[in-house]
Image 1: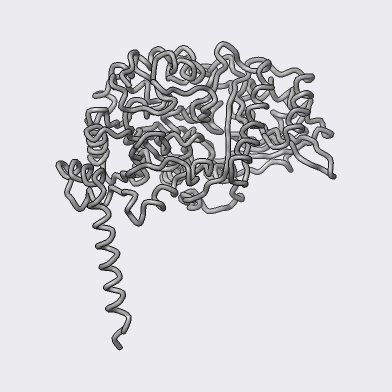
Image 2: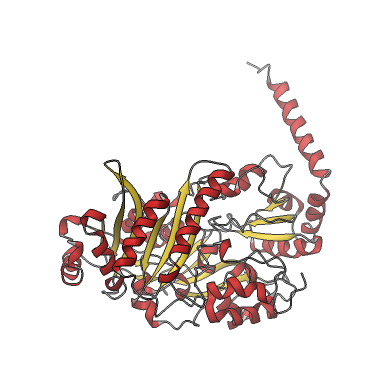
Amino acid sequence: MPNPMRPYLLLSLVFFFNLYHSMAVSDPTHQALLQCFTQSIPTDTASSIIVSKSSPSYTSVLRAYIRNARFNTSSTPKPLIIITPLDESHVSAAVICSQKLGFQLKIRSGGHDYEGLSYVFDKPFFVLDMFNLRSITVNMADETAWVGAGATLGELYYNIWKNSKVHGFPAGVCPTVGVGGHLSGAGYGTLIRKYGLSVDHVVDAKLVDVNGKILDRKAMGEDLFWAIRGGGAASFGVVLSYKIKLVPVPETVTVFRIERLLTENATDITFKWQTIAPTTDENLFMRMLLQPVTRNKKKTARITVIALYLGDSDSLVSLLQKDFPELSIGKSNCNETTWIDSVLWWANFDLGTPPTALLDRDLNDAGFLKRKSDYVQTPIPKSGLESLWQKMIELGKVGMVFNAYGGRMDQIKPDETPFPHRAGNLYKIQYSVNWDQPGNEADKNFTTQAKLLHEFMTPFVSKNPRSAYLNYRDIDVGSTKKWSYEEGKVYGESYFNGNYERLVDVKTAVDPNNFFRNEQSIPPRSSKI
């Protein structure tokens, strides 16, 4: 039976198509970009990957990879256009055409940049969103994989697992983080003490330079290849993919999580953790969380030790009973499992969750958050810990994450990659605060709490410079308006210590006019901005 509504539906579709087309035509920037793209790309393809503000999909495409709700407000500056390449040549066109039209190009992979620098700017700009370039090719013959910059860590772990049950990769615990940003800022996870950083296992890369050329390691040269492995690749070009070397993992690994309140020996455990966690067997990684909590209507603090051991529980218990008896760990605290199951467990999935859960990109998932970082080189004394508990309880919301170093990290020279924080660092601190309430008042309240705790920790952390971790992006470390060498030095030496100078040299050589830039990018020696 004919549908009497069909003519009206068709008319409506035609109307909306014509409306969108007329809006697009009336947008001169969109038209100019499309015209530039079609000099090297078929028109229908170019039309499908250029998403302007008049496009019905604009809001959903922009919001999909915003991971911090602080940068998803009505007042947040939005890109004029989002470019969503399907092919490497589309990235080249985006770089060339953005320069021709005089627009800044922001590069986004997973959107986990804590300060939103990959999708926010205070002048008219485009976003190059890499989420379609997510191919992963695992080659077990030489134990390597090519990974697209738009792939997530979860997709990488899943694809490794599909090919081998005894291989892994040393990268982060959050499965929705984009590979492009994670590796360009160094990348680390539970395998850090055994195998070092993610970038310590990058053996090749493909990058689009400022001229739109696609370069591999040989073509780009060792200086640029060095810079994009931890120096923030968005200062130098657009990484298309990384070639990584996989690492062996045992068939059986062990995980545990133990919580202790202040009344349960938390101070002694924390004090001892500082010297044991960085010096114990390199097969053991122990992270410690410090959090203010309320118990029986009384404010206190709690520590949580979360661990991965590359071996069985008997060996782990024996090791910790000898090295760390204060923790009072027994076999009942431990879970023996596989490496891929430990990845899921660290990502807060229940043991036994199918690995396919790692493929969920969890789009549009954004809470309000602020992060900061520090490095600790001498243990905090017990008196310092006691005062720290009081400060955390007083502030009420900010938590801290202690990530143990040592092991392989002590064996790699600080200038091997741009990431310099190797031997001499006991652990890294991440300051962490999350909240649900929108608005300026809540934002100011919680970000101020993070700043106050960071300020309180000044006597206990690294100095001259006070170091920070690039992937825990923190605009408070410093930012630039003119992209001068001196402005860049403020945050550049915090993130990169003595490696800042070489990064500036690379930047000056490959992008002297500073097209690739953000508020914390590496400047050329003489900025023309």
